[in-house]
Image (cartoon, rainbow, N blue to C red):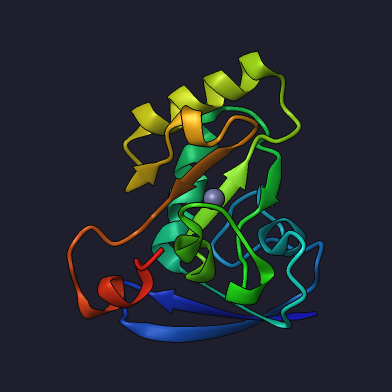
Length: 150
Ligand SMILES: [Zn+2]
């Protein structure tokens, strides 16, 4: 059972959920993203994300029209990561498609770029065997300055 904090961008409130590993993340439709997938290898008992990141996932999944295999999303700073890992610490980034063929992964990458759902999709040259997309904040708010230090 994981404790999940979700910042609700509509109400400006932090919500708390308790979910089993096989259950869907809050706001996820049709169980397309489970707690287990969101945490990946993270051992943290407390996970966090934002409602708009979960809604972005729903849109991306719908636009792609197929199952999206998830390597991980959430990480704590001491659990490692790649170039844009600060967005994973914020629970706003997803590393997906590791088990897809190159052709399928290309299709997913193009879908993520063209969907307009994400703030950032990492270039393929930096993500040869996965696709990274995230819902980072575009404006230089205090929060963004704090978490965007890679
Ligand atoms: Zn990533």
